[in-house]
Length: 120
Image 1 (cartoon, rainbow, N blue to C red):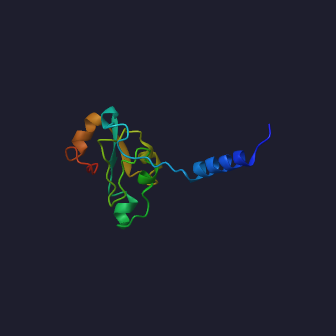
Image 2: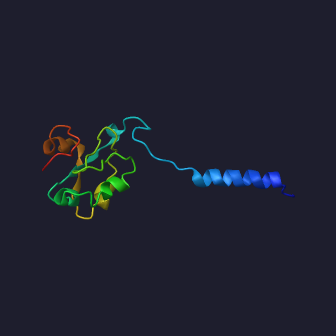
Image 3: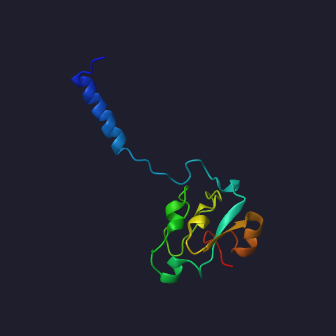
């Protein structure tokens, strides 16, 4: 098969479109998925590098959250309406400042259903 100049131009446009296309995940694309969760992340502020320094120094929990439910604030805040409880944030935390708590026990260690993750 012989490729024409028209074919080459078409392939170039398609390649440019693929290379320039970016996909940004957004909160809530699948609805409020927090009800799926059986365990939830809870922040231990005394250990958190961001809280201790008062600067946005770490935020690995925010960076690796696949659902983008962790805020990039001081302290980090979880949006429990959308957090599925995957535990990636706790796994990536270099100082173990995030613990995964069974949902039934979370009410005992949080201030109600506060998005801050509560305090121990």
